[in-house]
Image (cartoon, rainbow, N blue to C red):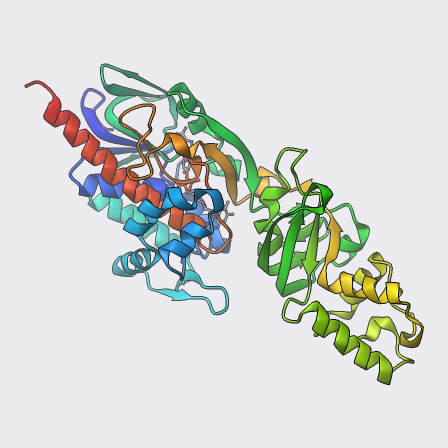
Amino acid sequence: MPSATSIFDVVVVGAGAAGLFAAHAAAAAGSRVLVLEKNRKIGVKILISGGSRCNVTHDCSFREVAAAFGHAERFLLSALGQLTPQMVVELIERLGVSTYVEAHTGKVFPVSDRALDVRDALHRRAVEAGAEFLCHCPLREMTKSEGLFQLVTDRQTFTARSVILTSGGLSYPGCGTTGDGYAWARHFGHQIVTPHPALTPLVSPAAWVHQLSGIALEDTVVTALGPHNVRLGSARTATLFTHFGLSGPAPMDVSRFVTLPAAEQATRVAIDLLPQISSGELVALWREHAQRNGKQILGNLPTGGLPGRLVEQVFAAHGATPQRRLAEVSKAEWESARQAIKECRVEISGTRGYEKAEVTAGGVELSEVNSRTLESRREPGLFFAGEILDLDGPIGGYNFQAAFSTGDLAGLSAARYARSQIAAAPD
Ligand SMILES: Cc1cc2nc3c(=O)[nH]c(=O)nc-3n(C[C@H](O)[C@H](O)[C@H](O)COP(=O)(O)OP(=O)(O)OC[C@H]3O[C@@H](n4cnc5c(N)ncnc54)[C@H](O)[C@@H]3O)c2cc1C
């Protein structure tokens, strides 16, 4: 047990993806570092990530990672530029975990497909740099007096020159992430952008969607539609039909628009089931087919290998009768059929919420944090990294990359801050 009377240079709150990088960076820079973790285990979310394979980062430039974070793009550039996806891959390989890039998706995984290898390597690295870890020791309260932070736990109260909050958001609360850090950030004068679940499956009331449960499409474009059919955002990747609605990376990527406040939120999505071909090409293909095969039925039109069960259901749901002979299809019905494939409308009544959300959108307001150091603009010596901040990226390794890069930068900055405090202290 670390001595309660001594002062830590840096206390990191939360041993997740960001906390492990922050702890290593601060300890490697010469700071005395303590990491407080609520769970009995370190890095629980790393362990369950990517279906326990851990998609560590994305095979792209740091600027592309930043761009994937929308409003947080500019904020992230400093951190991502200092620890790029390529540097993360090199680092993990140096730690003995070989990686590979998944074809077609650009996702980077350990060759072993074992998240445990990544978690263990990052933990070992931080311990070898000198960071001390205390598990099953949640931070309960944090105050500051005479330039020093007091961190109250059930075991003892710790004193620190600087604190890095890496306690995550509200998603997967069973992993220990119950939004604890927001209260401490508020206590020190920060605004919290209202958190809402992101990267979570979509719930649909449409029975025809439930009937398609089990159908998975590798390449789709899912667009979230807000009030007055405004296009709020879209994602091109896989979609899975389930007994409750839609899952898979594309629907999950647009879920952040479904969990917005009621007046702004998406209440349906439009799915392009065949993005490899344009609307014009599809209609021309169908017209030609119909001219030669007038006795065939709508349900048997060429639809790029989409499952027949799916085509029948989406046609029927959009007002095109699958059994209609092609020679008898009206202009309006042709348009319904086209819409069914290229802009398939699915009513959305909600999401699976934080319980199934891979990340939390919202969090500590970015304008109140210095993006070059990740230090609070409200309280000197207080730093933030990872999902506690108002940033959320798409599926594909982007979120770990952001957590790693911000953790690393916050660790270096906190160590620098602690050194400056020691240098300024009277003898
Ligand atoms: C099922 C699932 C799969 C995912 N897969 C991927 C993937 O493959 N690739 C990817 O890029 N992203 C993935 N993510 C997202 C990724 O896990 C997060 O973006 C990332 O973990 C955020 O890192 P963080 O360090 O900010 O927070 P976290 O990793 O959530 O860590 C926060 C830590 O703080 C601790 N804590 C909370 N409160 C306290 C307290 N009071 N005192 C002490 N400690 C506290 C928590 O116990 C936790 O260990 C996935 C998420 C989930 C839920």
